[in-house]
Image 1 (cartoon, one colour):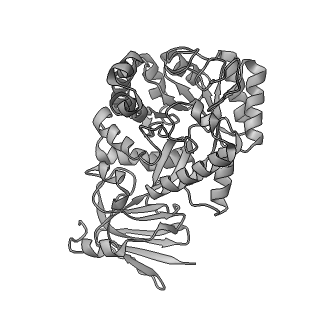
Image 2 (cartoon, helix red, strand yellow):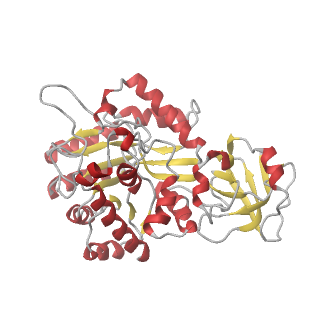
Image 3 (tube, rainbow, N blue to C red):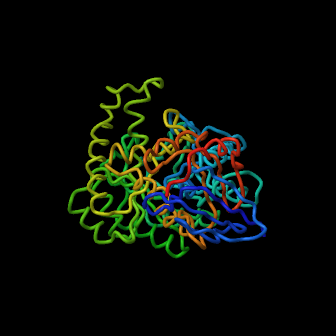
Length: 427
């Protein structure tokens, strides 16, 4: 079994603590030993990597992934891609994410082609293509007129949704997705400003329908997650014990109290990246600030900022991931969300990193996200100190190494690391 010893490094362990000098021994696909301060690891028959004072940290985890999105400008375009071409796009996206240091993806929904994400996961696991660990999701299970329903009366059209109305259709939808091998079930309890028949503060489902979804998913031991922007939709999700909550832009302090009472179990993700980029960076695609304001996106962002600044203060587990996969916030720019956490929600750089590592690992449900003995060796070597400036993770040239499951995706950049040795690792 191969052994790799990382020396002359600064360690960010994923918990949010300050960097410390240390050494890390990887054996096979596991982190075997971690030594900090003046302690040294003694091991024979190891390959030594001198990090030159670079930062060793856990691989990034994307908790709101849409790896099968196509960097589109409109959701119907996702459905217009033939399956063969779509798989090639998904394979490219997976490699791009790993190139950018994301060693694990928790899918927040696939597309209407139910098996696409499952097939991608299976191909990555079989070693056919490079890509992150992936928990594959169902399409967005949505109601008629809800977010993801792009059907036309006169023409077949689909995108990201699987339409289910009523208890029986809901149960069938979950069973169908389970049969095809998904890990996550996504239900859209609220609408959105892009939905033709349900606004972002509209309930898309009844109690009976949500209960049916949860019952069917729990029976099959699948993760349940929800798109829920309004206060009422989040309350409905909480009522039915859905613990992975996306958006929640318009929740009230009383609903925050309910979340805080269950904060050990609940994960939340604002997905502010798409909102921000649509307002301020989509003019090349015809979306001016004035047009975005007409869609109430500025109101949404302002409310989102208020909500998540408060949730941060309450110690809620909030995760990054900004609905990346549109033309103005493309796949591969996901690390930008960490900067949004700092600038929009008041997180420190270390706290934002913890959200993308330790908390992401907890969401994935496996031993990743920490530099800790017994954890899987998903690791990055970074040129610089991301605990002082998370934006350096947006440039893949700053990633001196990418390791997933104990194997190099990006070999250590020895020439760059040799230059770094002029500056010793922090004590």
